[in-house]
Length: 221
Image (cartoon, rainbow, N blue to C red; front, side):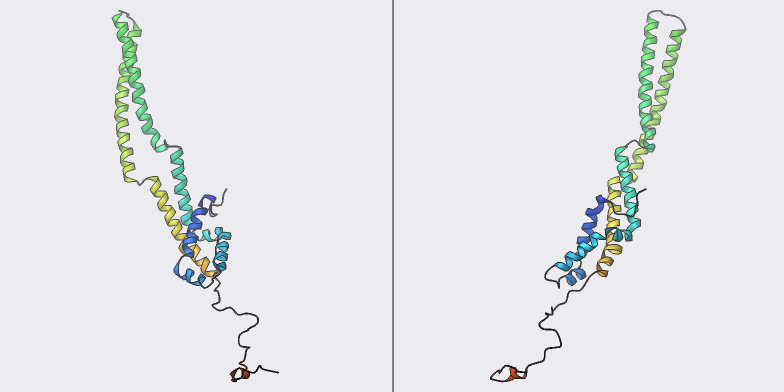
């Protein structure tokens, strides 16, 4: 069984979008702006991408909810006649089939009656025809009620696409707040404002007395 806490490949684009947004927040942008080379930002981005599953685990519950809603929407798209809609479909087909069969039987019975064909067959055909006509009428009323019920239920519920998008936005916000920003702050390395070169170590250079002389005579040991 797949680990639902791991980030799916088709959700990597959303993860990178959240990462890009987090890197653009004011505090992180200000800290990375001290590095004129941009290497600190590149390193922080690469580190976050390498630890995507660990970061996403901080928003595991909303991610599971998002996956469940998305899976249900895809299943409904592939199988539009689910268990709740199979009965209305049958209710629509049944009166059509029953009505057609009733019309056929009554027509055959009428033709036999015109041809003066007496016997039990004529009575059976006519009785079966009227029975099917009654079935068609009753199932037609049931189909109408079922369709009205389905329409009212769908009217009160948001579309599946809206539910998926809402769950996706909730997950992305939780990923940003609980996972991405704390991770970036923990691994943010401040860039020194002034670089110290080996030839000029701090607190070791003393002013040369000869520099203050007007003739600027070089210092000698």
